[in-house]
Image 1 (tube, rainbow, N blue to C red):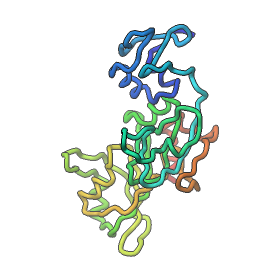
Image 2: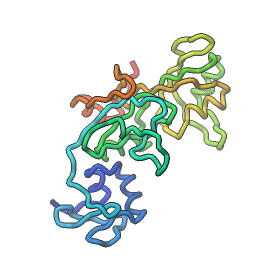
Image 3: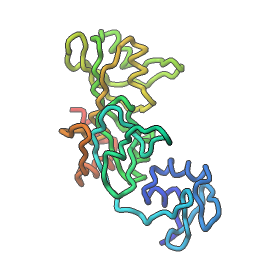
Image 4: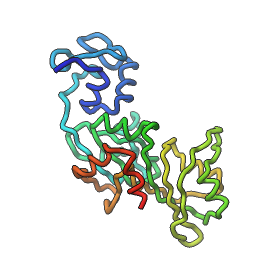
Length: 248
């Protein structure tokens, strides 16, 4: 095996996306042959001793891809902070591989989470330049009017001054005094839908993510998970070109 960049080696060993692995290196958590690694450094796992937090990395794992229906009140992380005590998505997926969630889904939100140890796919699905869509169903406590929907679609200035990118938002059905809306977006700022709705005066009751790129939640019930099919994996790797097909 030839020498490769450390972030690629760590990603292939299941430590997250290459960007996340770069953070490990810059934080001084990675050593090669006993010396603190530098960003951009190369190594050969066949002959070099590579450790993360003092523990030797394992050989590259078999790549696995899992669709999970995250219930409400579960963290979209591998580990909770010390003393936190809250459940994480990793607690719900009983597999031996070092899988991690791709992107985030708010603690209070529910729906589709992709879990994998494929760092390259993680980077492709989370990097803004690839423009992968995410689709949500949002239950609002009050029915939005056309002006509110139009403003949401154009983009909203949040409390911190950030202007959200345009989204595809459509009224689906009414429910009592409220309504379900469908939202398709490419951005993924923390709590973006909730903060947008707050600015528009639309109280949020539920947020359910139903799609990531070409992957759909389907019939999975909360806490259930399944392995992706070969076709689903290939479509996710193929990328943005399939997004329009999946809007239908």
